Every structure is written in C-alpha cells, then in structure tokens.
Image (cartoon, rainbow, N blue to C red; front, side, top):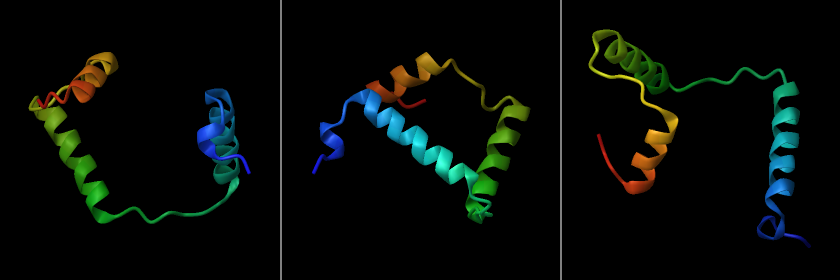
Length: 70
C-alpha cells in the first residue's frame, strides 16, 4: 500500500484537487460556529477603524516562519 508520504508533491496536489472537486459538488450547508462570524466582524471593524491593516503575503509568511508576532 502506498502512503501519502511516498507520493510526489504533484501527486499530492492532484489528490487535493480531486478531493476539493468532489467536496464542492455536494450541496451541503455547513453550520459555521458562532465564534467564526464574531471573529470576522471584529477583523472587519479593526480594518475599518485603522487598528489593523493588510500586509503583503510574502511578509506574512516571513513573520509566521520566523515566529515574529505583531
């Protein structure tokens, strides 16, 4: 039996795409947790007030990989 660890990166990506395609065809309503909506509203309010701002994705990756917290 082949395990995921033995798949190439390309094979893994193809598997993910196949799974996503299959899942996206299902007409299922997911119940999002209440905290998720709350977190989105808080983030939107922080952006609107200038308390938060968007940063470049490359900068965000460097911060995350370097453990830098802002």
